[in-house]
Amino acid sequence: MPELPEVEVLVRHLRPLLEGETVRDVLVRRERVIGGGSVRKFTKALRGARFDGLSRRGKYLLFTLRAAKGSKPLLLIGHLGMTGRMYLSPQDRPLPKHAAVVLDLGRQNFVFEDTRYFGKLTLDGRAIEKLGPEPLGGDFTAEQFAQALKRSAQAIKVKLLDQSLVAGVGNIYASEALFRAGVSPRVAARRLRSAQAVRLWGAIRAVLSEAIERGSTVPLSYAGADARDGFFYFGRAPEAPDFYAERLRVYDREGQPCVNCARPVRRMVQAARSTFYCAHCQRG
Ligand SMILES: [Zn+2]
Image (cartoon, rainbow, N blue to C red):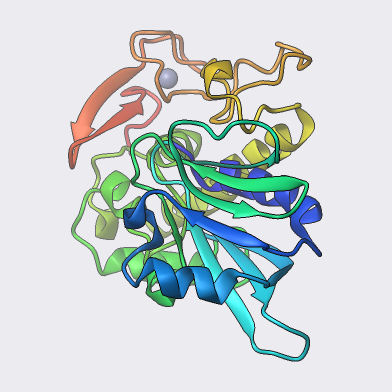
């Protein structure tokens, strides 16, 4: 499942490819992904609009377009859900079976493909209204984070997935950040000591920026659903070197030795999601 680093890497990849491109036509094959509102309205708003920017908020892609010179910008919000992919594909290549929305850009198509249709490509701005601060932005301070934790009785691992606490941290990086900070995933958020909260705050930023760094240096395959190898959500491009494989320290490593103490990494289920941790290194 794509998390913040994957989305950031995708945004950096797509931005220069989309800037200046004009939407000639719109094809909605799965109505559900445009998030309510009619296909006719969606199509009408986008047809003729020009891409002039792409940024990220949490796990959302924010495409800005302009219908015509001087007109108000249009915000198109994308979310990859569990299986979504967004990429450019030559016009003459047949559309994949699970293409949910296709924007005709002339020589190329912008394809939003999603086998399970949990993703979104919508003009409805409500999705991003309640998001907390960006973990890598200036608004996410250690003080504010520690204060917010004091108000929650939830287990810290579960609380980290709350997008109003901090935007974009998902299941993988929540486990990784807790391991990095040496904090037990079970401890109630409000029980964290100040020093632990500050360590966790730093660990969240570190694991996310390192993943973005890596994803930005390795050639990835954005469209190739069959190229996945567990390394990065998008999968490695055939020409990518394979020495980046050891990226995650606890996630999906149940039973394998902890990188710090060699005791086996454990898995438990919290709020219906797997948590991976080292019971020895994350006692506090
Ligand atoms: Zn350990």
